[in-house]
Length: 113
Length: 114
Image 1 (cartoon, rainbow over the protein chains, first blue to last red):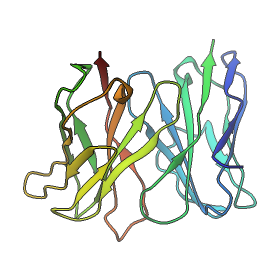
Image 2 (image 1 turned 60 degrees about the vertical axis):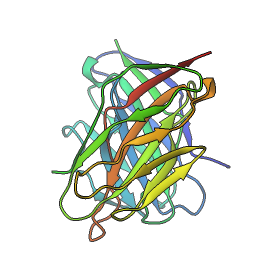
Image 3 (image 1 turned 45 degrees about the horizontal axis):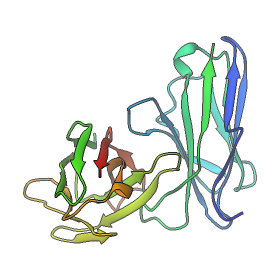
């Protein structure tokens, strides 16, 4: 595709449930990032992939959050035992070069009731 | 750790007014600096960047100069338009010895009225 694609665009779930958020980066981009953005705030770094490996997962808030990128392209962010505080927009971005130029998707709005 | 501070919004200007959005950073070494913009209903996109001291990034009439001595990267535009209404995020990455983990400021909302 032409840009970074994230699905679903909206996800409503109940407290305690498990959710998966998908990111399809721009073809050929080896770097992939997940961020979380709460209303009125800037994007908060969660995890960075270079190829298939998670090069930096220091932003994951706790062990309920996990992300994979098994073939170095599509990535899935997984959240177990969701809590109301997890409600936010989850953003994915990809990059081709190590120059800080990130291409963002439109995000997934997660609402935990 | 690395961080970015921006002036608080919202900022409301009349069309053709001069815009300044202040940004200061804290970082070890010499990071790269960015301004990203989020237009209503759209995803974040890079507006401009500067990679070393005294560099000036520019795009769409916006400019920002990398000031190492004041650790600042203020965004300016001489004459804003209604279409510039958006949220602007200052960001940094680096230094070059590490990968490009981009850290964002809290954002400044700009509304331009006709």
